[in-house]
Image 1 (cartoon, one colour):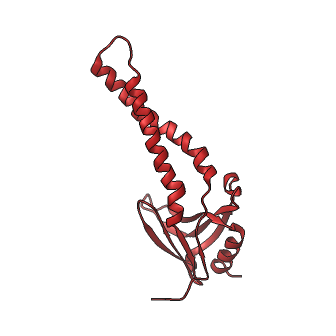
Image 2 (tube, rainbow, N blue to C red; image 1 turned 90 degrees about the vertical axis):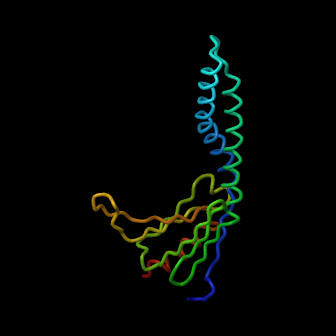
Image 3 (cartoon, rainbow, N blue to C red; image 1 turned 180 degrees about the horizontal axis):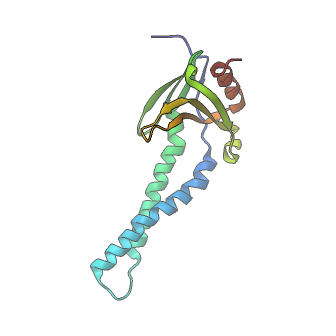
Length: 171
């Protein structure tokens, strides 16, 4: 086992604009399903000639609040639990709030490094870096596919991109 210290240890930044923009949109859309279900079931039980929307609205609001809370955990708490460690020959990352995940990517397998900085990420000087690995055989019809590992909301993305690119693609 290699106990060398990492070249760089990165913790992603929190981008609140992602939560405030996408949170209500996702919650409003996803809450339609339980709200509509409660509306239909409550009207079937009551069997009134006039539709009763109260139960549907109550369930809609409750599910909206629950989804917004889960999105809050995803956007604000998960980055605190995420660490990207860059070594000379590999990248190790630990992420997840509710479900912890640990992975190692060996730079010998990386064929491309991509940097993207979204408009909302730019508000916090952050970006996403994707490592594309060699082709793997997929289960469907023998087609080949590349595996893509994304490091999200990385601070100072240009510097990290240059470091990863120099380590993964020498020359």
